[in-house]
Image 1 (cartoon, rainbow, N blue to C red):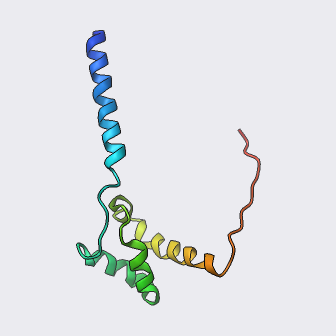
Image 2: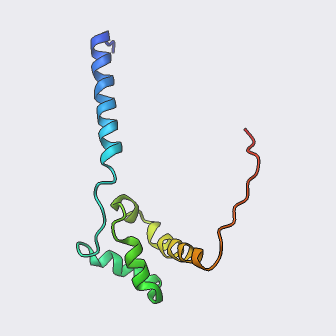
Image 3: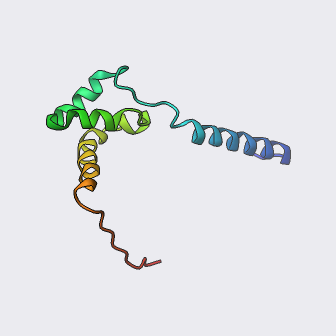
Length: 99
């Protein structure tokens, strides 16, 4: 298939417009516990003693993160990790990158 410069430019413009739209709008849909309480109940069941903390942590996150299959197990660990910052300072280590 051969494209004229006009067609190639229009296809490129369409691609870039679609890409920009998706990049900007992907996080507009946020999770709210009131709209899907079943999901938050499944996540809270993993760590019932931290239920309220998890609810606060999850409220308002982009839905694209929450509906990933691995998110449920990771959210409890991430919440615990985040709350440990108050008790223990963050420790960072830097190493040279092998480029």
